[in-house]
Length: 261
Image (cartoon, rainbow, N blue to C red; front, side, top):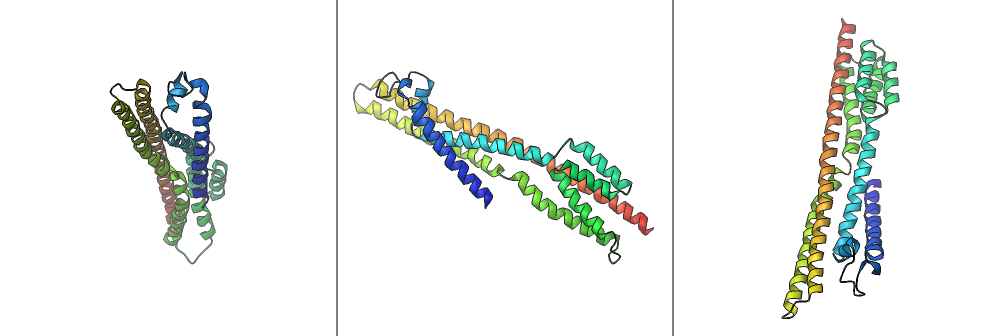
């Protein structure tokens, strides 16, 4: 529910900000050579000639930048405090020494997604340590179940908004293409209007087409790069989660077999 509200707020704010910039900044009379606003004096006036479709393209650009920043901050938080490799080595050393409390304390210090998942498994193992009704295999099964439950909570948080980035990248191209077609229609209408084409209307139509093409490509490029970057980053984190939980279970299995012997 919170996620859908967040996305809705981003969409509304992006559209409002884009409309304000389009009409208030780009549409300022100082950006044009004529009162009719058909001859731009600078790049802002040229963007204004892109037409209302530019508002949507600007909103998509703002959204893709916003979600890129949000994903970067979220994944940085998911990595936790400090490098992951030294943290995992400390946890493994504590487990090999049989010091579960120290391993849990290291997880509390790190506070990343991997630490949260390992802590869930260690908490369950510590809780079942004094239970004589379960054998070593039963305890490890419970620990693995706790780890899987924790992963079901953490992994979706890592992947959140990646679909939004992918969607924006695809939609930007289509909307940019739509604006391009609209601009070309205006250009050809100017050609067909009279025997001698109106140069101002013709240039306005071509400008609209090119501005929308550029806007669509910008959103698509940023969205695609961001999506692929974060997919790779999430893949690396999930791989490290799998490796860390596997090593932890192996150490706990070894400890359990030694106790049984």
